[in-house]
Length: 283
Image (cartoon, rainbow, N blue to C red; front, side, top):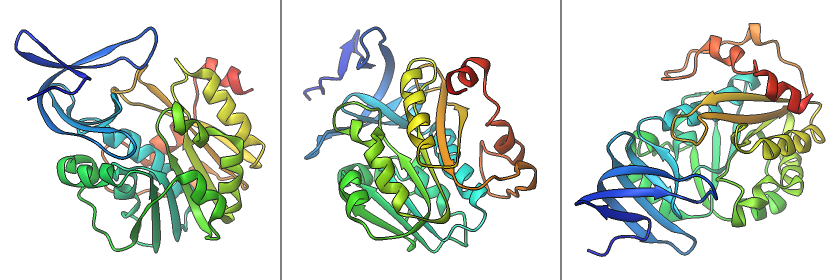
């Protein structure tokens, strides 16, 4: 079998190397190539690795893994959903691994979850081969909308209580998912008291992108905050999320009782406590 260009055989062992960055390469020893195929948009792989279990790889970049994917998905989903307190309608931009939707369905008060993902193959593959992340989700409240998230945001007339932007890195077409015009369109879809959150990259390697995201969100919301999580798969480990809202929320009053592996009530309060260099970058 011809190996995908991202996979090398070394001494009869398979190695996947993520080398999309100029000065950093990360290699993983692979047990098996579970799935490998070009979609109309990108190359999609599911690899079974030794240390991180099954992982979703898009165009040679790791997106999530069965070992630590829950950390990112829980943090980008439960923080805004908990802070809102009464979410009824939720929009997810991206999130093709279905991990965010899997967390959102834990809220019985939510009536509608629209997941706008550009690549249907990613959803199908993750539901079949990466169930540790996707849960093979089949909740009737989840509507899969296979479309460009930027175009959806500019044309939709829907109204949402919480919007979650689960984007890939700002490279190529995904750069649009970090633009002010995109955030502005999403802002117009929020109902009164709505909350929006997006992943804002590594504060270690992409501090400028985090600052840019914070500044753009701040121009649209009365209150914008950054919070963090530690995701071992992602370069640098420390990852940031930027959340925007128009009302203040007392973190001491929040309630949290969901079945999770990472997020707790106390953690929701602590995750907004930033290290000095991050505070200085947004001060």
